Picture: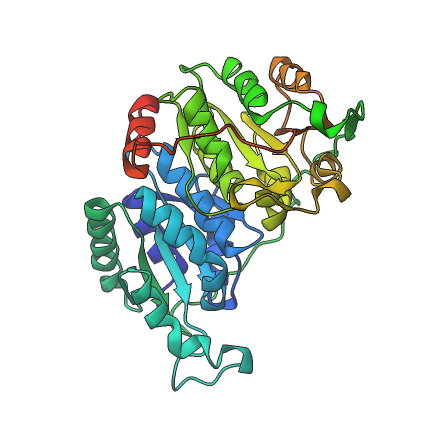
Length: 387
C-alpha cells in the first residue's frame, strides 16, 4: 500500500498536474489530495467519457511538458470507449488512465462487478491500451510512471494503470469553504418563427463563426459529421480541428483546452444530436467553464450526416439548460445575427452559449478533410505553440 502523496508527487515531478474523472472509493485518496492542492487541477466530470475528452483537450494545448490523468472505476470503461477509440487513439492525444479493478477475480465484490471485473484486462487489450497493475510499493511508482510516459511519448496514445483494492492508504478531505457558485444566467430566446425553408443554412452560420475567430487568438473545434466537413470546405485554417468520432465529446474536449490555455479563445461547434447524447457536459461546462470558452450549437433538428433522421431538439430549450447549468450567458435564436452579438459581446465570468436554429440540408459534393486527424492535430498544436 502506498500513500496518495507518494504517487501524486512523483506524477507532478513528471509533468502530471491535470486530473479529471468520476469518483470510485478506491480513488478517494487521490481525489482528496488533489482537491487540497491549489497547484493541481481536478475536474469532476459527468461521466468517464467526458473526462477522457477533457484530458485530451488538455493534451492538445499542453506546453512545458504538462500532462493529464483520467481516473475512473472499471465499470465506467463502457462510457469511455468512444473517446478512447475515436479521439485519443485517432488523433494521438496521450493521457494516463487510472482504472480501478472492481470485481477482480478472486476478490469479493458487489454483483454489478461480476462481469466487468474479469473482462477489464481484455477491454483494455482490445482498445490497444497497454496496462499494468497500479504500483503498491513506493519504489515502484517512478518506474511505472516512466513506462507510461515512454509509451505516451512514443505513440501519442493512452497508457493505463489498473488499481487493485487496497492499493492506496486513506487520505482525509479536510473541511473547508465550498466553491463559490455562479449565479445562473437568464436564458434569452429570440425566435422570429420563420418557415423552415427560410432558416439560415449551416454554411451561413459557419461563415459568421469564421469571421469572428481570428487565427492568432482563437481555436475552433468542430463536432463530428457535416459540421466539421462543411467548416473544412469553407476555409481550412490552422486554428481549426475537425472531430471524426466521439460524438458529443466536443464540449468537454474544448473545456480541457480552454482550461489549459487561458491565452486562447476556444470555440466549440456543436450539433443538436451530439449535444443531446452527452447533456451532462452542460453541467460540467457551467461549473468549470472559463471566460475564454464559447459554445455554439447549430441545431437543424436532425442527424444530418446519417440520413436526416429527426432529433428531439425542437422540444428542448438548450439555452434554458445552459443557463440553469451556470453558463454566464445563454441565448437561442433562428437568426444567425445572434452569433455576431455573441462574439462581439464583452467577456463574462464563465462560458457563453448560443443555439442557432438552421435549416436541414448540406451542399452537394461536400468533401471530407484530406488532412488526416493526426496531421490536423499536429498543425493546430504547432499553431498554438503546444507540445
